[in-house]
Image (cartoon, rainbow, N blue to C red; front, side, top):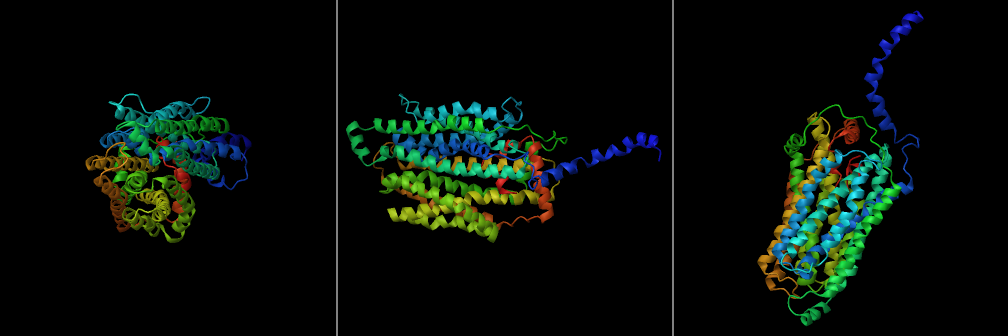
Length: 526
């Protein structure tokens, strides 16, 4: 052909291929990026370490409140059990409600010089540190003390969500390399595990003197209804030590991590609204049975965790072992996590679910024989069971999502709805379980601040530490095991679904709503 015609016709002929073939090169670039030797998406050790340090404060604070807040409200602040029930329920509900609100506002915020997510982390830091400190502070008045703690516990839970959602979603904006994202997530999870251990250890060591046997002699000298100044001082010191981790770790996060702009183009398809997508997900039988089963199991774990310290203090003579028992639970949970990951891959997920049953006979044994040797065995086994109960749902959710996507060809964003709705329902179940169980102490005649409780209270604590978690775990496992296992997609569709998740996470308007839990999609499904 002549050059002239070729020159005039070439643009018309060659223009369409880049438009038609533009998506495949982007997909190939994503799939081949982890194996490429390009250093453009590499993250330095310092960046990963600083990113992991950013997750420490929330885990330190959450660990301390999970084990010691109920004991503080009942025995130190001396709030009636009915009001403590409202405090715990209100705080958990506020944390659950903050998840979709945080995703809504954060995803509609504008990018600044520090990025789009980092300003939320920096802005929440001083307020969440203050809310946490005043959560453990004893106000000078007594009539509205329950309202004081409910206000600051609700603030703490909501602010913790507004801190955690952008922080965990920051993984997607560290680099465009999925392999480096997985590496950063591993650093984050490692530091969060260390933060969980540190929170329970530091807080427990500081406040242990407030619950020593000599406190009863001090209470007799001070008179009935009086509050020990030593206990107030110890809890304030512990609160200050935990609260200061927020500004310190956030500064290191800001100095060591740079948020990259979102490299993906804006989504052209509208997709489904949250309510429409939620309606589809809850009508998917495998997802519905998975959620219901782990609502019972997660509520059982939270009840067991919250009442262990109270049980050791008032229903047994184990108050001197509380700190070591809590540490035993956390250490065994951390150390057994890699073992459960291997068992999940080797024997399957439903087989691994039987590991949750391990704590059932030992919890009943502790309620019947509350001695120190039995308590340490129960603590170790409980930690092992808690590890699999936390790992298993985040390992099964990707299979449910894959099966759903193969059955329903829907637009982007449904993956985030699966994850965010699971977190939301789990928090609500924990709120209901803790609220109702704490209210039962009021009916049993629990006396706030008393050194010795009535026999009905002791029996109630034994039921809460043994029978209640046992019934919840067995109910959840029955629902989980009798339900059919979702079909695992073949390798090629699974790769396509995993690839579609990565592209969806970059484009979805509800990107950050499911990142609240430590075991996120980054490490759980790919």
